Image (cartoon, rainbow, N blue to C red):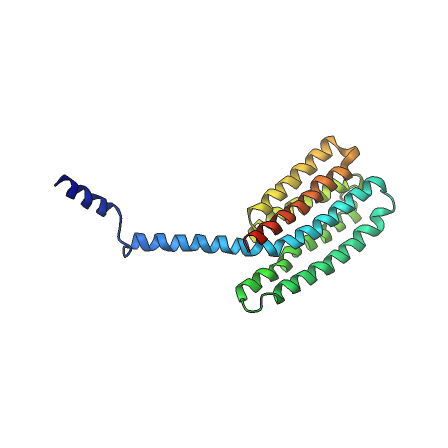
Length: 211
């Protein structure tokens, strides 16, 4: 008798699948699965851009540590043009590689939205440098702060990792300005641009493991 009551009590504690609570739980689980799958599809989309622009920043900053006169005159402009063309090519390839899946094609095309904040950043930062709002002596930490801010806002597009990377850039710029100005280019190249490159490498490897 006691066992029968216990069985009924246990049965009452677990709502049948037809109840509204169970249906809502199933919908929540399905929504979580969709979010996980969406972020996994974004990994291969974001990784090539992180590798490309991480290498661009790393080479640029490290080069300025050894040549602050002629290196930035030709590298930053020519490098940005070449990286921009490659970014556009990557975006087109990602879109063409998924013609049968419209949703996946939208993920590939998200590379265009990925590059837009950095285009606005270059225009705004270039104006502030040219107009004297920002002194040339503090150009490297300034650009690091701008990049960090852009990555924080990109969190809505490529996930929490972008926010963490942006916060790291902001912290790195502050520490460099306070304590490491003599080695600012080397520090920002290795720990700034290098962190973007390594993040892209990790995301690429993770996306390949998930298929």
